[in-house]
Amino acid sequence: MSETLVSSLSLDELRDLLQQAGYRVEAATDPVANVHYLRSATSGLAFDIRPGNRLAGDAEGRFADVAFVSILQVNGELPRELVNGWNIARRFSRLQLSGPFLALCMDVTVVGGVTRSHVRAHIEIWDRLAQELVVYLREGLRRPEANGAGPGVERDAAASERPEPSIELAGPSSH
Image 1: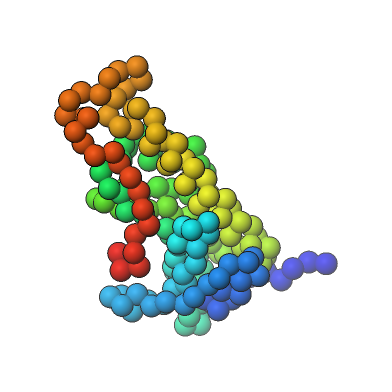
Image 2: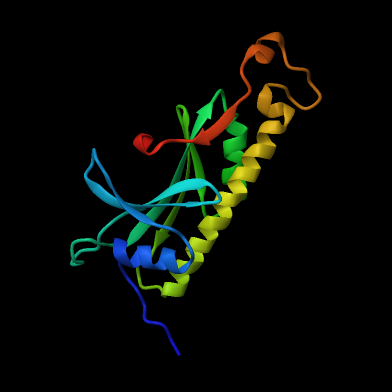
């Protein structure tokens, strides 16, 4: 028994797939760009699913790829080594640090045709990566290097006066 191939998605189809995977999902609209997208969360980490590109000839509201995005607000300085370490060690997602925001992103494409099971597998990969990110950041921020000291080196006076870096979920208005 073979599954039918999907070569484009609608937000409704994607919402159904997420709900089948056990997620609560809500439709939202970006008030600035007037773009529709989906919102959900896993383990307390909110994320958006943003539609990407349309293929030539596809009906309005259908797209060939999506981006899963979670935005975190950084209080203090986040070491670039922590961000780069994630990007080196993880294949399917990337971290991007821009000002006070840290974004976890993962692209999913259906170009060429994939099964619904394939899309579901990417949802599961996203879930795992989002959960790993929380642990990775928590452990990374505990290390002395993350707080201004190298391995075996005491923090200098200026570094000890800087606030410890912390990360929290960014509100919906910051997306």
